[in-house]
Amino acid sequence: MTRDNRKYIFVVGGVISGVGKGITVSSISKILQDRGLKVTAIKIDPYINTDAGTMNPTEHGEVFVLDDGDETDQDMGNYERFLDISLTRANYMTTGRVYQEVINHERNLDYGGKCVEVIPHIPLEIIRRIKEAGRGVRADVVVIEVGGTVGEYQNILFMEAARIMKIELPGQVFFTMVSYVPIPSKVGEMKTKPTQHAVRTLNASGLQPDIIIARSERPLDEKRKEKLSFFCNISKEHIISAPDVDSIYDVPLNFEKERLGTVLCHLLHIKNGKRISPRFAEWKKFVRKVHRARAEVKIAVIGKYFDTGDFILSDSYISVIEAIKHSAYHLNRRPLLSWLNALDFEKSPDRLKELSQYDGIIIPGGFGGRGIEGKIAAIRYAREHKIPYFGLCYGMQLAIVEYARNVLKLKDAHTTEINPKTSHPVIAVMESQKQNLINARYGGSMRLGAYLAVLKDKTIARIAYNTRTISERHRHRYEVNPEYIERLEKAGLVFSGRSPDGKLMEIAELPRTEHPFFLGTQFHPEFKSHPLAPHPLFSAFIKSAIIKTKKKK
Image 1 (tube, rainbow, N blue to C red):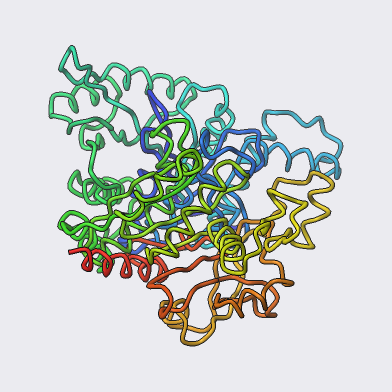
Image 2: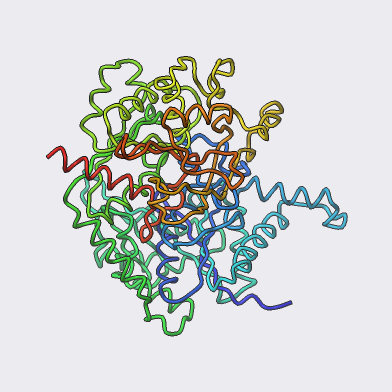
């Protein structure tokens, strides 16, 4: 058996959830990558769900889809965006997935008739998956985010797996705690006691952090670092201040200012750790654009996940938000995003006039009938008033419905997802999906992952991509009904992207002569937009919105 020489960094949370573990993992991974190391990242979700596909975005955040079709936590998107790589299902793990695998092995007699127990078999399966993820891409370092906070019942078995790995691989397994250091408003002083307790809770699991990422509203002062060092049994140089920042893309730069890269290289015994690749200079250049952008471009995002409150917006549509930012900042524009509830346009149609103040409109993906007529009305307004429109997945399907109703005059046109009895099902369930719906097989059964598409010459899509064949990620059950394609085309709609066999419509658009930018995709382009490589369709959309901005002046 060959020795495992990889290094493993576990990132755990302390004090509160949502403290920034995902961005920390992304930033640590990027810092190591920019020092010439092959890095991969793993997200562990302590849920019984086998994947994130059946979770409500308002509770869990966006479902991020990988090339291989795995439906994962939104943090996987951050890993891909920061590292500019494509991950696989080997990089995502849930409690349900681990238990399911162990039970499958037991049913197949893979344990040789032994009594299968939570300890040690569950932690051993976790360890196997972690090692396999690193081995599969020949990584030098594997960075693992353990969901939740230390001391929670749900992640105890993952902590146990980490403890076993540290014993098994001495000098190769390290721990970073991302902990919150509050500043109570009535006290006005930064308090380290919650982090001290979090570290002792981690100690109770047999683990000691090698690095503490101290999240707070303001930077840590030397006194607070000394206090944490003394009470948490950790070198002061290994306590990294992580104050609030305006952009998540500032985080790797702030970590470098705190010399985290040097600390990591020392811990991992990395030679030549001071050599930083030119890619990091590109990152700095992008971040400068983020801060220097002054001219604004106003984008309206029309959706339905707004009723729970504003705090859920960034999680429900995080990839869309970041894709808009990537393209806008590269074009030296500061995006101003407005969140419009589709239900408002149903209750008060007069409010559609408010859309004229925006430079572009996006309707992102989604499911269900809530707010659907408001979205269709907004699409019609954008089409008739020449406002740049970008529809993503459901946003394309509803654009087809709107066009069929108001241009083809098929007043009953609809998607069978909402109205199975419509006399004009312009959007219908895929044949391969019908049996899944009959048998109530919903989880992991949609058209998922990356598929090829062929683009039509001299179209917006073809010009934007500057290539004939593309690969994009999907997450849907319904498609443009082939029976209506010819009628829609004769009425002026252009299907500029199709599956290689020509049967599935991937992109629909109006010619530039008819509209400055009216385009929808059956796939989710936002999943493939990265800070240093903005998605071409988002860039084309933002360019069109900028032109509209200039015309207003």
